[in-house]
Image 1 (cartoon, chains in turn cyan, orange):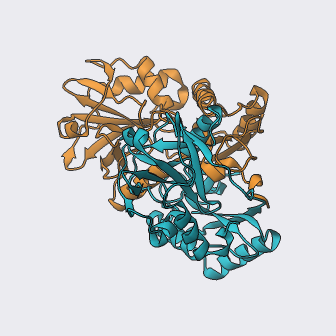
Image 2: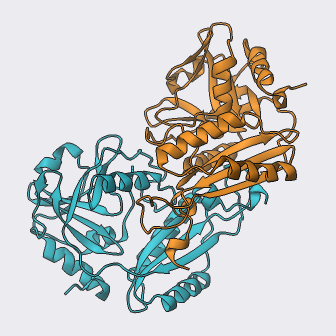
Amino acid sequence: MGAEAIDRGLAYGDGLFETMRAHRGTLPWWPRHRARLTAGAGRLGITMPSDAALDAALSAALDATPNGVIKLILTRGCGGRGYAPTTGAEPTLIVTSSEGPAASVEPLAVDLLSLRLGVQPALAGMKHLNRLEQVLGAGEAAERGLDDGLMADADGFLTCSTRANLFARLDGRWITPPVDRAGVAGVARGVLLDAWSPPGGLHVMPLLMAVLPRVDALLLSNAVRGILPVGRCGAWALDPRPVGFAEARAALAASHPAFRES
Amino acid sequence: MGAEAIDRGLAYGDGLFETMRAHRGTLPWWPRHRARLTAGAGRLGITMPSDAALDAALSAALDATPNGVIKLILTRGCGGRGYAPTTGAEPTLIVTSSEGPAASVEPLAVDLLSLRLGVQPALAGMKHLNRLEQVLGAGEAAERGLDDGLMADADGFLTCSTRANLFARLDGRWITPPVDRAGVAGVARGVLLDAWSPPGGLHVMPLLMAVLPRVDALLLSNAVRGILPVGRCGAWALDPRPVGFAEARAALAASHPAFRES
């Protein structure tokens, strides 16, 4: 096999993905997932598949797994030797499905990881295939017996967990970090920014990791599980049902029945 | 297909690679390539293939392409959902070959790219599969009509080009940047560090991008092409045969006949 035959998704992580909840044969928030995918493809110069191709691949996956998790991978495709992006390559679209997630979630035990995220504005916000930082971070969290790990960037700003966006309650208001220097613009985060109005407000602003001991509550969000309460961060017990939590759950539930929790 | 069936090399860039010259059925510097691969696998917790498996795959590639370029990819393999590294997974080994490189190299025209490399000590030095920064950098270089682009890290330190290590002559000595915060520990760079003794010496030290206008000469190195002379950096014409160049070529040539240039 020639090196040109290796998909650039494998060779360089030259692509994007979306991980989505499947619920009764539907894909919650698909327009948001598609918008993020389209934005990322535009930034990387990857050709978007046609709507027909996307719909066909997703329909087949939903037929196989009406309730579970659907994963979509889009790469720049094959071709070219060396890093320079090939133009006009046929993109590769892969859609897979799996069971899960588990129905109920206990409040998570998290802590700040020692691993920092590199600051890279050119890639921040995208759900691209370069995920070694998350792999190493998840490995550190597992080794430490944590359910998930909080990640700060190289400049010391809290950014996200290894697999979720982060919301922190500090000084009577909720804060979520920007994702323009590191991290992913999560779809559930987007829903919350649009629809969650907790007491004291929800603010997008940088959050130095040094403030973590002063945080009253933490919530994590992702598109598969919705909102994940946090019961412990390092040595600190946190209220897993803090002020604003019910409104956050209600905001997600109002946007799609998959997130109506009993 | 279930998401567990996707190779983690594709899903997360969870793996490593080596790009090597093939010369008359031999692999120059294979012990160095294998040492870097082994070190990276150790840092990422990826199981190394047996020597027998490596030898068999490389022999087949060398039979197909005695002179050209051999590319080896090693991933953590399949299995697991989510980022946390699976333990005991069977690693994936892929070896491909292709023709090239072109025999002669004209002095390169390069310039400093606007894209910066993120600082990530946990990944620096390894030739891992998370290469979107190089893809974007190579794209910027191509758009600007450059043969290659120099990359500084987020803190402003020159690190490498999109596909080579960097040597700069400044104040009468040669300097190559460390690769412990960004960049790859190139195999040809390693040979030069061991065997090149230019007048004024060869020093591993940080090089702020602000010094670039004061640099007298630049050389790039990689394991496929050896030493690449640079004739222009931005607005500055550089001597493509600077003091020390002949000794650098001689050092590579002495280490393997593939790099004996006519």
